[in-house]
Amino acid sequence: MNSILQQLYMIPSFRKAIIEVEDRNHEGPQAENVLYQVKCIFGGLMEIEKQYFNPKKFCKAFKDIDGSPIDPYVQKDVDEFFNMFMDRIENLIKGTKEEKIMNNLFQGVLANEFICKDCPHYSEREEPFLAISLQVKNKNSVQESLKYYVEGEMLEGDNAYFCEKCDMKVNTLKRCCIKRMPNILFLVLKRFEFDFDSMQKVKVNDYCEFPLELDMSPYSQQELARQDLIKRMDEKNQTADDLNDEDLHLLKRVMPENYYKYKLKGIVVHYGTAD
Image (tube, rainbow, N blue to C red; front, side, top):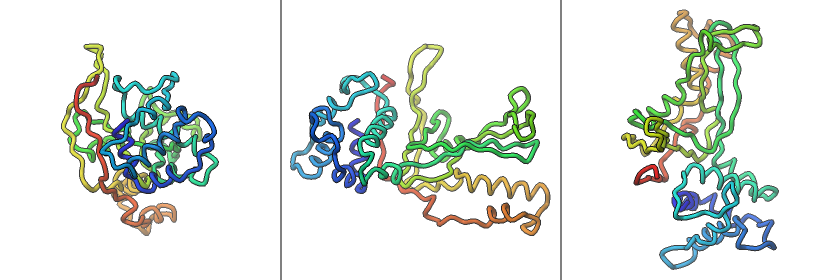
């Protein structure tokens, strides 16, 4: 909780929006008002000359799924808290002029793709996201984890995909990639898993490095589709002159360079065990 709130506080546009947003519940009890308590934390960190701000009142106001306040003596997953917090704030600022701040800053869009190999058909389902969860086990870097994330899997044999347009099962590549990049990107390293041998939650302590600057273009839908097209052209010995307008547009379309470039702004490092 502490780590995430500090990260969010250090995003100037988010901090400004939270402090300035109209509080629709200002007449209710402030002890139960999450938005008011977040405003107090951010305002306190900005203006108070003490070395700390005590978030005790926020802990009481912020209820979990069961309606219980945060217990600071029980460890919870930071990703779970992040999603609950963002969802709560998004609901509290609905109807205000700042209501789109969450989407504008943090929301990206994933594309869950089904690329049929035995027929020319293709389908995708869009899915908004606030953070991307990455495998850490046996992955040496964030880039390696991202490459694994967009690799996909072949659906073949009994597991083949049913193509509605062909009305039959076909071998299909199923993969997830990033269709629209967020302005601020959150990556979650999956360090906790359940060990079915010991029947306990364990922490994955594998080494995983992360860069100060990250190019996300290799994991984008556009670049993956472009690489698929280039591979297909090589296999069929085609040139750009052999392509239709749609494929030609895909081959030549270039996004502004900084669209995919991210600079590292903050990290949360977890010390300890799964408990």
